[in-house]
Image (cartoon, rainbow, N blue to C red):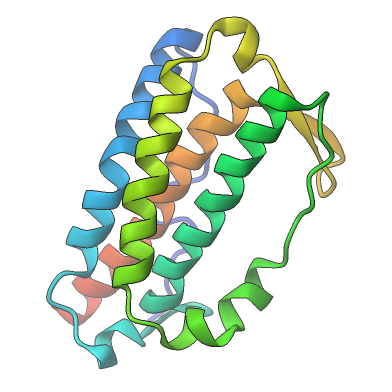
Length: 173
């Protein structure tokens, strides 16, 4: 069994208007906590510890919480500082920390519910000028606007939930 690299397809920026892209992304981010919870409902510890490529389902769920906390903070920095230089983090190393490998999923599912509620409330209150603000990301060495980051993180949810769905389908869970 060789899992696909991008089971939800590679990320491609939308060709719709900024307003349409924003609304679609908000809708996906609003649904993300519920969809994540549904994706893991009924899975036992052995199943949660099954790997999709390099990460277990458990690590994937904890990664979503870690990643989206970071993105929410990046949005807040972008709105309160002049093009902040963010600190990147090694997602692989974070996934190897004990909590990501062993913790019950409920804490990360709860984090996703809270952070996504706040994040969507925040984004709904932004105007076009706010969405042109951004942060400097050290890995691509460029400024990423909030308008660019928002749909990317909506895709991020789809990407990881498709990994879980792929495993469920392969193992008939």
